[in-house]
Image (cartoon, rainbow, N blue to C red; front, side, top):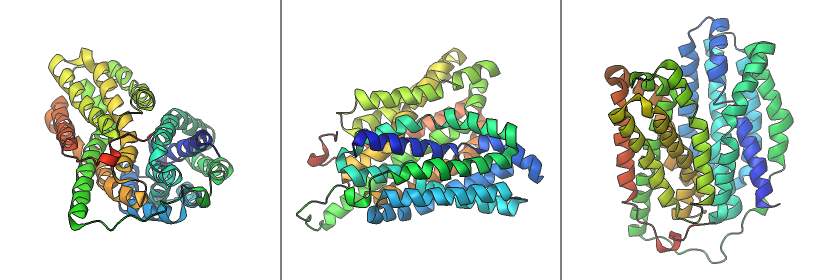
Length: 391
């Protein structure tokens, strides 16, 4: 099976996985809360618990993909997605609501981007960079597809019917798509000559590099999750009208997709380290412009922030692959991105306190984090064999 066909298949199944999990609270949380007699914030707390669970399960899922191949794990994720969505549809109170979201957290750990990246690393080794970019290009439209579909099902069948509808999508569409992915026996063959055992110094350097990467991804993950929750309010605090803030915020999606196209074309032959540096510096540049020059520059800020987000999603998969290689990628990737997943789950609540205290100037905090991550990237020691970017 050609790499392009695998990208189309996996990109499509990733789109459905994101649309049926990460993006459903924005549309269904209010109706869920009213029907269950709870606050909407309770639904989002349950969702945050699911996101926290993904941080703890990521390394285990990565090891399973390393051992059995991504196809098996992704197929299993469809079953878990169906179970979690069915539990959500049948919930009559907060206990089952939280239990359903924990099951969905397991499914997200098994079926979202990091699992997809590990699947591609197992199939193509260091040549997986273009495929990783390709699936993020396709799945970048998950909210564009998922929100309207969730809204349509909500209007026609209620929130419970919407959950059943997404469960059916996994059974009738996502699972058959994942079933078409190459079997584990079709993955790239391991090197004929086993590598020499690493020295103690090499182990220390590997640990140091992994910690630096984890810090970089955690900083980006915090900023992305914080602004996803608070962007319109921040723009209003910076002086924009509510209508202008919403209009500027709508540029986020196009900016992310455009940046991924840039990564797929102009930057594809450069080392992912360059893409990582670009991803970290765009947010502080945009934040500085907005805070110094005010609301008229809100659209430019959103474009720069969105572009950094778009590239950072790809870098999370491609930089560890370029530096460490494909061997053991899944488990290592799960460990490196665990702090980013954890901070992504708690960032909306934590950053809310910063916004409440400092208004638009809260952006200096996220800008500082991004600049610290930018500096950390210069401390990475890229081995000579990884200096040539994978295709």
